[in-house]
Amino acid sequence: MAVRHPVEPPAAADPLTAVSQALDAILGYRFTRSDLPREALTHRSALQGKRSARGSNERLEFIGDRVLGLLIAEWLAERFPDEQEGDLGRGEGRGQAPSHGVG
Image (cartoon, helix red, strand yellow):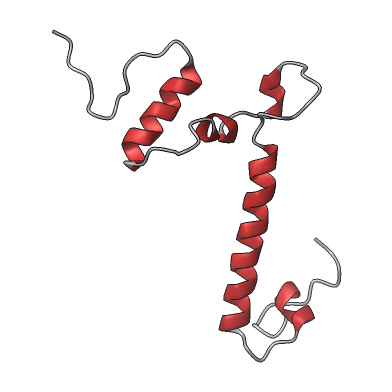
């Protein structure tokens, strides 16, 4: 009798389904929308010439970038309450050299 690793999902026909099942097991969480892990792990180039990016991770990446930006902005505002808006974005006033629009 073969012994499986406790996190290893049962064999699936589709590799992304297997990854999704493993992710559920590792996180101890079952996604309400079972298509989200697949979408999160699918690069547009893997859609093999389909005209639409639907099903790729681009939409989730966009949302994630915005959430991360919001969290960073909140952290900066709380950590440096006396800084002006422009200085927070450039890092000035915290011992960092001004960027002068470079980078």
